[in-house]
Length: 313
Ligand code: GTP
Ligand code: MG
Image (cartoon, rainbow, N blue to C red; front, side):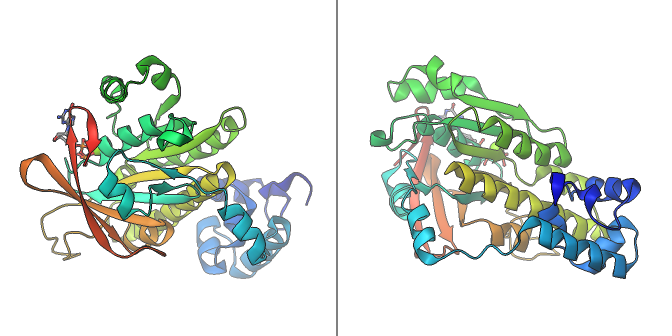
């Protein structure tokens, strides 16, 4: 289909296109994988029209997407592993955080999620032989917690030139969840001119949680979070990059969810994240990282510390 824009789908006029875009359906793939019922509701169209639109989007977006195993193996040969500066943590992850994958750090406030992100950002700028990715870093900062002074501390502790490290870390504030999602698209454009090997979203869920309140909003929140996660995974694949996202959970048992370790966005985020890591505080400034639900690694724990110099054993 020429132009690949959603206006060119049969049955999509300017008004419907606008409604779809507002609801987060910005490209053909997003429409192609949606159910007619949901699309009809979102765009305020009949279900039979929705069926037609989805089927045209499927053709245009090339949803086919089967690849042979040898091609996948070839791509996986390019996977690199990013160190955390903790040997125990790297071992837990089979050598470090993998590129072409999303790692979700979840835990209560002060559990070290942001500190871990800073450490990864510094490390990603290092040469491959030092456990880095020799790359640039994008940080989508939703809570205004980026602190260049902390980066300087951590870089100095590793004998790196702090200014050179800061120059490779690109930070954008996201003002709401929609902006947050747009920034991933923007990042993909910018990535053509840079070697971006790590993308951090800290926090992944805070805006979504604040904006979509109540049961009625849950479906839409989950839909958008789902799209966001898939955009991130696509970024990871296209750039052979590590994605690290954070997710706050309350340590207090929740009357509705029960399990205190249950992260926001539950199931949708958990499903799209390749690795889920639960961080919790322990005695003497130590932190425990537990790997949960990995496709290829056993569930296990590592003890790390977060100190002046950053993350260590
Ligand atoms: P939320 O974003 O509130 O959910 O928390 P978080 O999980 O992101 O926590 P964060 O990574 O900000 O961890 C904060 C903790 O890291 C502090 O309580 C300190 O223990 C430690 N920390 C942060 N900065 C420093 C520092 O400069 N020096 C030392 N020694 N520790 C620090
Ligand atoms: Mg934080």
